[in-house]
Image (cartoon, rainbow, N blue to C red; front, top):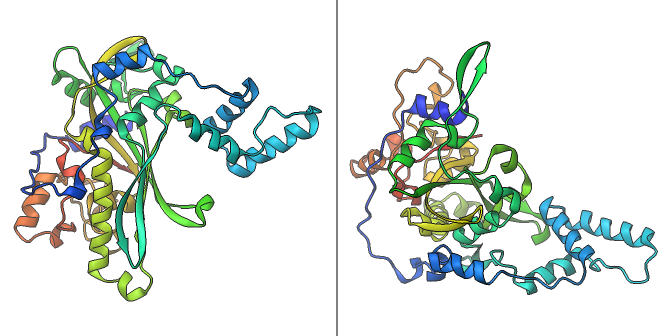
Length: 382
């Protein structure tokens, strides 16, 4: 039994009543209409008709940039490769870029399809402007589907898998699309529609090339991609760098107003990124030379407990009686393998807890979060 199947059986996921916020959309919260583009039938047929062609300086330049991108080589490692090649190639004119920064500037100027990032001003705090750098989620999905190995091995429907062991037939749950929850969700779709499983990876980090500043990268992959392919670097797409609001003094840092600002900024950024897929729209993509209609669902969020709590507005583990982002188990019972009943942390019951002034008892902040709009939520704490 794998982790997806264990979630099916142990948590017994139920359909969650969506939370409808009774609030009008402000001007600053409106999503750029272009973020919804790229997955209509017209878009797909236009992509097929007008395939993009990049004029590379030469084949060696192209392959070098493909290698550095595929294996996510650092600037210093890439420059070392350039220096090594130039030193021993004995060529009068090197076919490679002078430096990796020059190579990346070429990629930026080439405007390679689906790889263009945008920036949007979020807020100003203590005279510092904070900006969200992101790629529309639909474009990030398409950046994965243009990779031949991803596209050719892409699973478009539920596949039940069995194998014989000592003469006995055993069910195998090797991939997401081998599991019962996939079969259940697929059965609810209209005829001819397919499930698109969205996997998100989240982790705050230090960005060396940005002056030792902190950023919060968010990555995306797809559960339709087999594990053996999804584990490769090229099968993950960087979606955004979320800003991390910082205070200049400890008094401000420890104030509730500052912490509320941090939560609101984080949730606003997630809304900008995920709103184009939250309402489960029909998305059309070209897979194995066939136009297929998909319905996206966020199936898994890979994060440690602190990150998962941040995503769902749950108290941080150090100050929480119920620190799990997925359920309401007390911190004293997190390692209790004998628990029989586990109450899930759903948008509906969290909304009720907030309305009944029981938010503190449930270790949740009162502000709504973007994941309240999902019918299902699976968070795997790493």
